[in-house]
Length: 289
Image 1 (cartoon, one colour):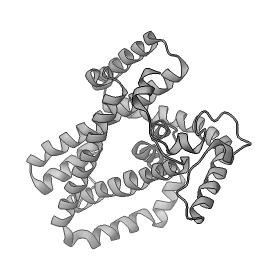
Image 2: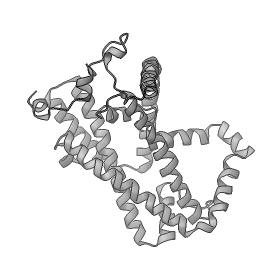
Image 3: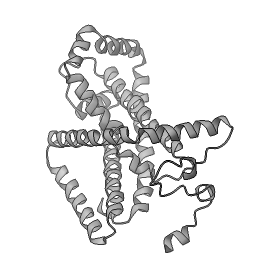
Image 4: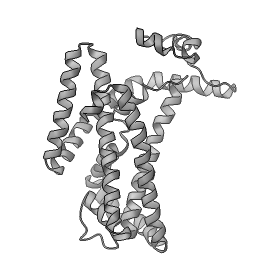
């Protein structure tokens, strides 16, 4: 991690843009192979999902909070929707209209939760008929994969988990760096943050998984509370942007946003004019500045 983060933002981007797609595709392929091997169990699995998720006892149990709480915590962890962390990455994208990137960001909910988490559920349900005495947590998924494909698949799953963890560490580090650079340009502060991040990763590797999960859940819950207030305050601007984007699409245009299109909004630091939005980026001049 130290070798990557001390190499700068460009090295972080080049590493994660390679790791994340490979990680996701490997895992989805692994899951599809396991489901195909147990294709005869699919009707039973679908029946199990719906009868045990939507029955009267389950609905009452969910209303009491445990299932909802667990689902909310794991949902936040899987796609970060509503936490305010993913926009740090989205803001670094080069698009002609902010709504374009907003729509791309929404894909994370569908891909991470509906696709990746669902394939995990299918891996477990087709491979572990009796969940009563099954292992909890990531060990349950590992056991299901190994029982379906053999001991060699455990190594592949370990590689996938490593790519997931490592790319997540780099991504969250990048969020912090961009915010620190916004607050101050002092190089000593950034160096201190980098050393603190490495120390935090080292400490996280030593403590128990329960401590890590509880700390992450608490931190993400606090982030969500703060961010939902910000979302409420910014919702008016967001709807105006969406209206502008939709109007341009109806006119058959490739939407381009400039600050003049929202004259009542202050504090827009970019989107000066159409040429600055759609024109080429002069990288040598940018580096000199």
